[in-house]
Image 1 (cartoon, one colour):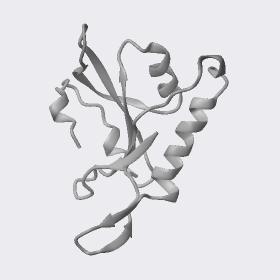
Image 2: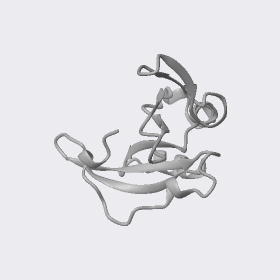
Image 3: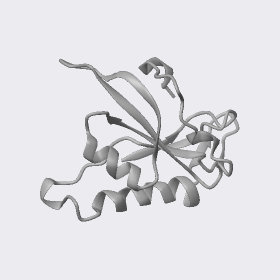
Image 4: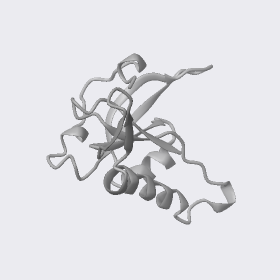
Length: 135
């Protein structure tokens, strides 16, 4: 499941992976990679997300700069899968997952064709709190 979000003016318009879920008995055969590939294509090439511009009462085509997702730091299997798909750890988000054991997340990104200089995936050195990543 995914969506497009973020301000275009600062090159933050992006595809966001909300969730990837594959039944346990169907894992490790490439289904998650296929799902990710489709979202990347939609974000990068096809949609290029048709956005309703309410103020102008019109539609415009807006290609994404990158695709991002958040994943638990402890979910090594998922982190490794995303790394193998070309994602980078952009930054660490402190206590992103709240519960008994507040857990950090990796904000992982993959540049789209629109970001020719790949500025959107230059890793940040300092971790951030969740309020710094709100769209």
